[in-house]
Length: 352
Image (cartoon, rainbow, N blue to C red):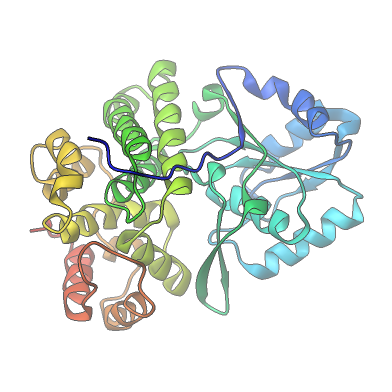
C-alpha cells in the first residue's frame, strides 16, 4: 500500500539537448520580453558576451560580477544595472553563483529568468535562494525565485574542468541523498533522487577518464537536473545546514564543500534513516557514508576541509553555528556529535 503523500511540481520549462542554447532568443520572446540582462561570473564573461552578441537587440547588456554565496551587495549592484539598462528579463549563464544572482534579483523584482546551466549545481530548478550578508548565509523559499526556463545544453559543459565537474556532480548528488530521507519525501521525489544518483554515479567516472565524452556529459546533466528537482520539491536537512554554515561564515567554496561533507553527513544519518537510504547504500556497496567517501576518493574529489582552507581552530565555532536553529533532521542534532563530524571532515578520515 502506498502511503498518502503530497507532491508539488515545479512549473519551470526545461529545454534539454545538444545545441539547445541556440533557442535562447526564442525563449526570451516566449516570455514576452525584449531586453535581457545577461549574468555571469568574471571568468565566464566571454561566454556571456558571446550570448549577448547572438541575441542582438534582445540583449540589454552583460553584468559579470556574480560571486559565490550570492553576496547581497553584489545583488544590489546587479539590480541597479537591470534598471539602468531598462532590462525586462534575465539570462543567467553558468553555475550556482550566477544562477543564485539571477534568483536574488528576481526575488526582489520578479524579473523573468532564463538559465543556461553549465555545471551540475541543480539550483536552477529550485525556488530556494541562499544569500550572504555580514558573514551569515541564510536561505529563503519563494515562487518568484524559481526560474521560468532552464536550458541544458551538454555541449556547453564540455569545457567544464574535470575537477569542477566532479565536485559539482557530488554537490548535485548531495541534494538527492538528503531528499531520500527528507521529512516531506514522497515516492516521486525518491524515484527521481535515485535516478539522479545513478546517472551521476555512472557518468562521473567516465568524465574523469574522457572529459569530452558527450554521452557522459549528457547523462551527468540529466542527473543534475533530477537531483536539483528533488532539492526544490522537498526539504533539506543536516548536510545543507552544514554547507551553508561553512560556505557563508567561513567562505569555503560551494561545490567542493558539498563534496567533502556528503559522506560524513550521510553517515551521521545512516542508522536513523536506514530504510530510506537503503537503495542508495546498496548502490555504494552497502555503507552509505563509507561508500560515498570511497567513490569521491576514486574520482580525485576533495576529501578534507583542511585542503579547502578551513582552520582547525574554527571548528568549534562552526559546530556552534551549525547547531543553532537547525534544520529538521532524522537524527537529533547534537553539538558534540557535529563537532566530531567536522573534525573527521577536516582531517579527511573515512566516516564511521
